[in-house]
Image (cartoon, rainbow, N blue to C red; front, side, top):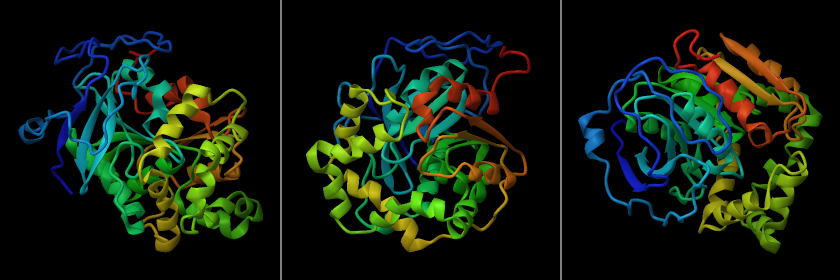
Length: 365
């Protein structure tokens, strides 16, 4: 669906300088957590269309109110709403308006906040960073039907985001389910993806083949079948103030990865009306629909990042994922788990920035 609308909702950190049309060579500088300065951006993409610009409006575009603390003070970003593919999504955006568009896609059971520690690094590298709450999550729309969460629809949501920002293409990075959406984009909308980074998730054919041949992976994926039950998974996960959901994050990550503040934010997102059911509908849709990709070879330049201690996905799928790419590379982080974006946010951000580098040759040290 072309021609979605970009709608302003809630602005945060308005003291951050917004870089305009000024061009010039960007100089690579170290970025530390909480840093808010942007680097001057050379123009990389076509300007937003008059129709898209005219569609920026209002602070009441989202169905849910945006909490005052939705974006931590350390994150140089603002909230917006984007209408795309028949739904309205909450997105967090940062970086120079004329920077190369980079869309970051979160996984389950997260929301945009899963990328919060990577945003400043990427914004300072010159990217226009856009991080949506994908459909069903947190502040975004939550369509009621399982069929609303088919992988084709999820991918078209991202295409609509690229359209909303007036761009022909974007670099895309995804973790977990976000990477699954990214693989589908790279396979079916390759003309809209300039570069792709997949983090701890294989392309659909690799996952299907591994499930068929590996009892180890079948056992690791037991929860996918459990999620097919109606209502029970939602009730079990939410019991005791989301005790099992929290334990699922903390028991499968490096100790100390998820702070109490992180958990507070996740509980708030999961508690939103209809959110957890919508999140599980991603799993229900993929099992019911059993989609087969039209292509099996990825032509988009792809970087696969893999936390080697992932307890949900076997490590051998990382190499097999790269084998399906015409131009693929693998970065393995030996001490990281499935939650590598939380455990190594700056290293992951630097890998993304280098792979989809908008800087002229030699500008980044």
